[in-house]
Amino acid sequence: MNKRTFLKTSSALLAGSLFSPMLSCREDQKPLTNWAGNLTYSTGNVSYPKTLEEIQEIVRKADKIRALGSRHSFNTIADSTVQQLSLKDVEKVTQLDKTANTITVEGSRRYGDFCEMLHKSGYALHNLASLPHISVAGACATATHGSGIKNGNLATAVVGLEFVDAAGNLKTLTRKENGDSFDGAVVGLGALGVVTKVTLALQPTFLVQQAVYRNLPVSALEKNFETIMSSGYSVSLFTDWQQERVNQVWIKSKTEGNSTTHVKLSPEFYGAKLATQNMHPLDDHSAENCTEQMGVPGPWYERLPHFKMGFTPSSGKELQSEFFLPIEHAYEAMMAVATLKDKITPHLFISEIRTIAADTLWMSPQYNQTCVAIHFTWKPEWEAVQKLLPQIEEKLSPFNARPHWGKLFTMAPATLQSRIQKLSEFKALMTQYDPNGKFRNAFIESAIG
View 1 (cartoon, helix red, strand yellow):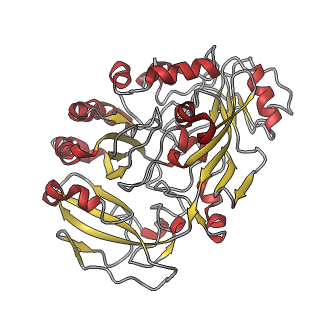
View 2: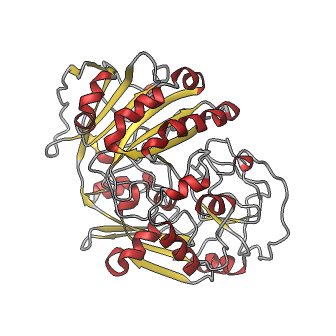
């Protein structure tokens, strides 16, 4: 990532918009910010189409353009100095196919907007991220994930993709019919086109109960990391890297049948003690906005995320970084990061450790490898974080760590590119759908090369 572009604020409104009000209805002329408020985008030229035809016309006429989702990325992946396109006003599409066991939604739809309907219809997605507020297209384009050694990232649920390419043509790809190139397009980083619809594979609905354990000795992870991370359907470790302990272990487990009876929980877990009340990942925060714990079963969509749809997620004003590496190096990598604990902790809210199953998606950090993810939720102190990230990246370099596409990193482009096995194939795909670089911005040019 070009560090100079981070936190850049620009009031310049480029005169390149030739669209009528019908095609480019704007809320205002001020540049938007991302969800956390750490980033102001570089243009106020934002189009808000309402139909597929308007999207196509806007894309055809644009010289440079980037699509916006729910604006949950912390870096400049969705930035543009020329024009952005928001799909938030696009007509809502929900097509539940009970024969194929799939659901098709528009790309801008947030997971939390349709999960309850899925559950009531007898269906579930295989996993969710820690917050349900994110858009489907944006989450899949950046390989956003939940946790679970056997659970792929959210993009692995995609079986069909509809997008508008640089010529304004509508393209449809499916896993069944397009095979290898489909795997290249799903985690597309917004570089292939504007994703208008996504079709997701479904499974029968299920219930989940959640337990939180406090103060897990770090030593327990040395021999038991994969066993601990496999102790539930989805498991997360929260740590501030201090006192040789993991602050909290969140274990989300499937329950048998449809019983909502309170599940009796073990009082101890590898030396950690069962929490006696609902917890927030940050000990000093209220658990009001967190999903129900204490072994109370509930629908998958109300337990797999950490935060409720109707509440402010996570800490609020924050920065985020995340790095992925092969799971077999998990403990060693954590110990490497821990050597920086006294530098990290003053600027950190909390770190989360998760696991994600291997997949076949070209630009996914989990391509052909089950990964551990080491996540940092930082205080909004970019100057300090900017100095810490190279040190963390150096500690994780022996494990060929890769960053999350939508979060903050300072890794040299050449280093990042050397760790992407299918980079040349993805570049060819970009050329196929966007030969003149209409959808490329400074982030894409730097990260992909």
